[in-house]
Length: 535
Image 1 (spheres, rainbow, N blue to C red):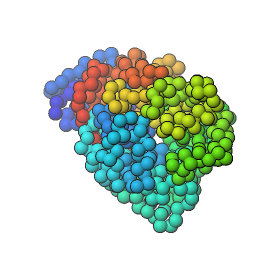
Image 2 (cartoon, rainbow, N blue to C red; image 1 turned 30 degrees about the vertical axis):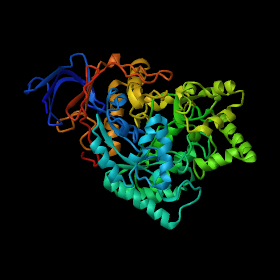
Image 3 (tube, one colour; image 1 turned 30 degrees about the horizontal axis):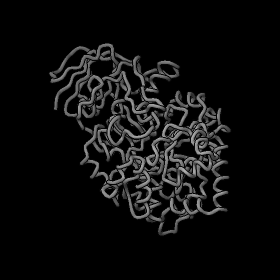
Image 4 (cartoon, rainbow, N blue to C red; image 1 turned 180 degrees about the vertical axis):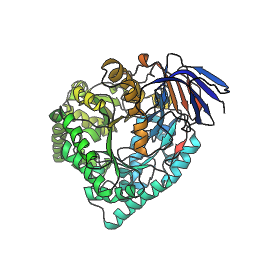
């Protein structure tokens, strides 16, 4: 492995302190020295004069479980400076543990990639150890850490049923969660907004999360409600807090937001509750993607929860029943009225009719000569669609973006501007989360300093995962490094043209190997599977 020198660098170490000028030396996948004057022998010298050097960015919230298996290069993340992803979020660890009941969910997720569905028989493992071992063989541009998802293990044990688990079923879910974490998953996630997570009572989650607390790992949650869809924003946040208290585990609130019109302007109140909880002694933080729009499956975002019990087949039966179809339409209209206008629902990916991608539901309904709710049903009749949703207020986004307890995380997937991962019009966060944060919140709006923004991308997420040797620039730490022209960092990905790589991030080094060199991909795959705190 080449010895690398990064000289004349403006160093931001990841801890939030002031920048300083120095030289950084890398060898054997580690940072071996940071100096001001003396030099070490090197094979490669990078002159970083006028550039900022930071730790590699750690993305705490991603959904790359399947995209990584389809194309492990996954350039959309590494080109924006991400050197580590945490997958298995929102209760969905798509690839493991997979059993008969979860195969449908796997196929639904794969359908967004079109022909990629043909490889479904090669993807999906009955235990997490098998998935991690298969991932190691793939080779990756960046480091991957894992979480086991509640929805996945619940579906594996009891399908998509809307009922409490039996004692034996709960015991099996706890066993699967414990087995997965012992195999190398660094946490357990829930997506209580979505079926089947929505059907779980709080006590069910606490019982499983106790296995998280025993191992000092992370509980990540897409809380039950981020607006007014069901129990409400603050009841939902208090549920997450109660789970953390009773299970005695670290809590990470995924993609914090005030979602739907009725809770706009509540960001300060939300953060006050988090701050008070921390003061009381609970280890709780959050993360956020820096956009006022979200992305979800059309069924997860719009359909009433009662219509989802039993999976897609049962939902289609409801749609074909004349009386129940009317109730379903009423439920869809009610969800739209709570904060999702037809104009604010854009089809991002629909492999069954790609001509609909980039169009909103109002346009589609008008072209069909029908109502928005009926158009949504016709779309789902053919297959699942993914929608980009306008549902947040920019002032709330700004408030969360500048708070020191909120990390930067994408809620996206590792994609590529070419090949199987270049389909559709996905949310641009998969290509532009970190550049967008620097471009808008640091450079333009000046809500935070660059060093504080970098802390929220590096040492803060590393601390949340309990990592001991990543997330900062210091001798002995992993050589995950970003070099950038900070004032010129720009996300080029847009909602209408999302498959665009950023600019201004000139070099990305992963485990001591240069993966991005002068904004060009080198083809190297030095990423590791991170399965313990010291990896």
